[in-house]
Image 1 (tube, rainbow, N blue to C red):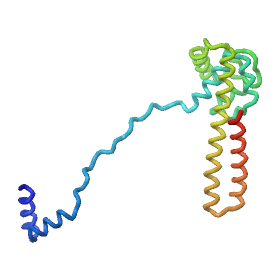
Image 2 (cartoon, rainbow, N blue to C red):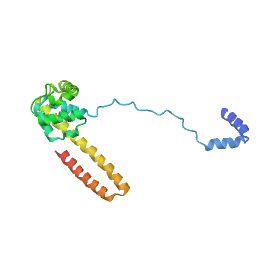
Image 3 (cartoon, rainbow, N blue to C red):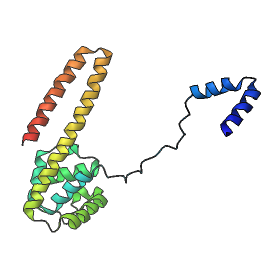
Image 4 (cartoon, helix red, strand yellow):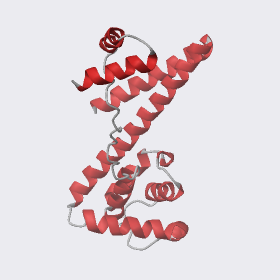
Length: 189
């Protein structure tokens, strides 16, 4: 009833027949209601370098675990403080760190934070558990770095292919293949 009333008013306003307004109304589908976009709740920001902090904390408590740092490039660690601590472990392994050594005095605040983390999380762990966890976390850091490098190479390869640079694309493909083989070998260990 209401619809017909409004259709008559529209027909009078535009100078058309009621049948024409009804035909036009049936042709156009009703518009979907405009709804406010649903936003997902923002997750709490996770420390990107939590794994690195954990492995450095583990090694702080366990001298034998520090030997594993001799096999990994300290440049894989983010930030000057993490790199300095990883280099220190590689060069001076064997003794747990109870105080901040002179070469690391510039990073005393970070060293203290790592020491607190080590005591809170890993203080009750056995030496064997700490050693195996250190090895696992170092492998994880290395694998994550290789995966990031792989994505970087893929991006550059796509750019080289799009620009038609066949020599650069071939070199990038070779690097990518070597990296994929290296990642596969690491996964079998």
